[in-house]
Image (cartoon, rainbow, N blue to C red; front, side, top):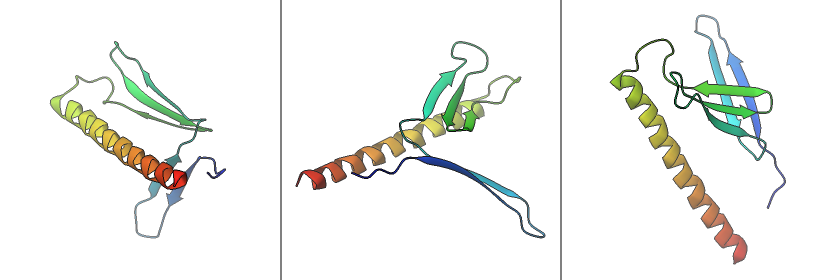
Length: 100
């Protein structure tokens, strides 16, 4: 077992003649908070907080929710479920090796 903690960082890249690029990476640990806000109301969203960095993900505000909005959030849920399956697989593989 290692003692590395998670971390979050944002990179802003700009090159002459190219659009700016902003990337935020979350490598979560036990200090991360992941919550659903606004459930049962008009603006539900997923909030992820890690250190001083936060991200909110939800459908467009102040417009009627469309089938496309539902499809995008469903895709997010599907990809999150695939990530969970991969992390569970890694955990089982690593736990099996540690026990051997």
